[in-house]
Length: 109
Length: 227
Image (cartoon, rainbow over all chains, first blue to last red; front, side, top):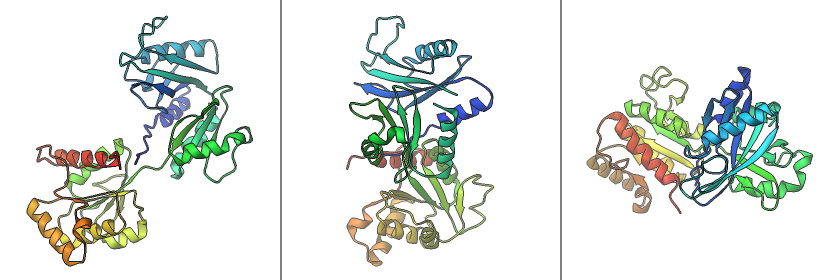
């Protein structure tokens, strides 16, 4: 059996929009290995860099915020990003647990 | 995601129906899927696979496509019989864990809106309440009154309808007596064994929130038990 796991992040996104904030929705769309959060997990980020929810166990959230701020600034409507184990590129983050995760970032507008 | 779609999603959640959000990861377009309702024409060729994901309550990218499916199904229904002190803590745990709670208690002075703000309270006897609510087998019963005339009919109903979780508060002795009564009413040992009694996992605490935690832990572990 399964229970529905609605963490009400979308409801919160709606509240942020009502408060005239720019909102990016991050969704876990794919995982490989032992990634900490299941597919469908959400996080929202506003133009000030405030965030709510999570896409991993705190492993890549900072990078997701940074990437979100970048796409707000460049006015990119959506973007897919991936994080791997000991990712040696720009972020210096990655999943210590050995998992991989793909995240879809999209502007809500 | 368009704001219009987000608004539609928020409304769907309020309507208490199962649905899915479908997103095309290639162009960012999205729509709502609802079983048996016409699907947005841009997604029509994926309809069969979307249905498959939906039926399995599964989230993910449909193989070989750029279509992401995110399902929203209804929470498990938990019926608490007895609007007692422990129930007040159960309600707060269950909210965070996304169970849908209803409280049944014919005693109006217990089951008041004041004690349980925002909770579905039914001031009726269990049999009458269940006939009105029509729960399915994906439901749970937590019987807390340890008063046979309130708990027993609820337990009998839950056994008959094969609830996935049935628990009853009370000491070992209370539970033995309860089992004897059920036996006399014609229930088999196998049926009676389905009742968790004394309810809850062993945590050791005796305070109301601790008992509530032990009950809710047992409930969650039963939800995810491999069958």
